[in-house]
Every structure is written in C-alpha cells, then in structure tokens.
Image: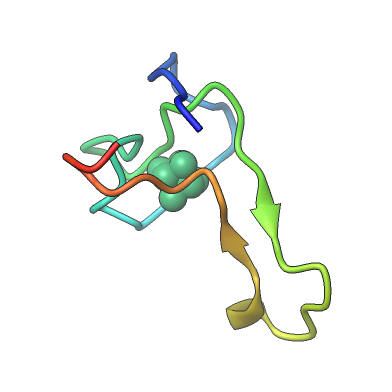
Length: 57
Ligand code: SF4
C-alpha cells in the first residue's frame, strides 16, 4: 500500500517513532490511518496497519 505523507492528522498522537508518518512531536502525518484488531480484547491486540517503517516503504 503506498500512502503519501500529509498534513498532521488532528487528534492522533503516536509514539511509533520508527514509522515514516511519525513527526518530531509524536503526531501522525498520514492522510488517514486504519487500526486493526478485529478480535481485540486488550490494547496490545490492536495495531496501526498504516504503519510503515522508515526507509522500507
Ligand atoms: S501511520 Fe500509524 S504508526 Fe505511523 S505515525 Fe501514524 S498512527 Fe503512528
């Protein structure tokens, strides 16, 4: 999935500093995000599927 960097996504804070969309102030610059975890019962069972490691996509 190729997604472009965008303006800061309002209301989203993110500590995943290795994601190419993560900004210096720990916000998200993706146009939209999708969070997966269809059967989640705990926080740890959810994840951002828009995550893209820096330099890898
Ligand atoms: S795409 Fe997901 S993991 Fe990456 S900065 Fe945005 S919220 Fe965080």
